[in-house]
Length: 237
Image 1 (cartoon, helix red, strand yellow):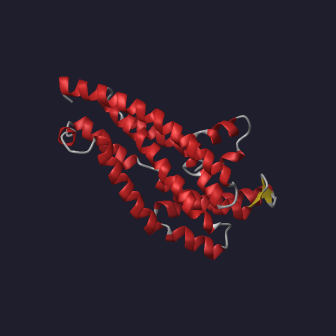
Image 2: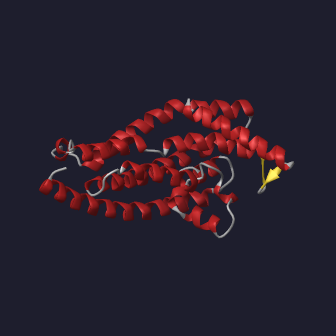
Image 3: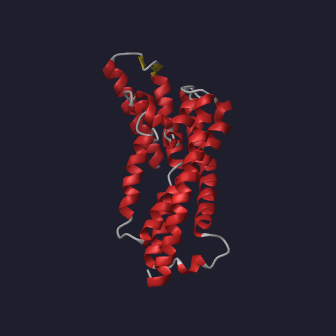
């Protein structure tokens, strides 16, 4: 119900924006494009969040129960990554019917042939999201009240992914900078590509941006984890 309510509110807001502006287009796109963006944006935003598993990872370290995971044949990162991807895969298949039915009923702009590539980018972006969650969870070795970092991260991604509004509505030079960040691949790029707002070049650029970010973020995460485990095994949780 949560994404359904969110989508309904955003659609009403865009209808009000166009009614208040008394115009048929904003930044070269009509109302139908923004309604389609709001609908698919809420759906993709739901896929690219991982706060639930992030909380679990923090709790494992904070409570000391990480001991049981350290002796497993797979790493702490892999253990929660496999759960995250499995959960997202199942929920995506089940909930995808909602936006598909809605865009069909209201005849909103959607290029169905672009769905496979849009989802490929989204699930590739999930690797980066999990890696960031791993860094935040690893901070529990050093800091108290790490849960606050999850809230701050979620608020930042709410803006930088394009869930709040299409990123190309930002003024320059902020627009080019924010779109170039890997976080735009969470909502703005796949939804923009799916609704005809963007072309395939943006998809390839996002794949490159995410790849660079994954390498950097995982290097930081691996370092923090190794140092944290050494502190943990030496002094306890």
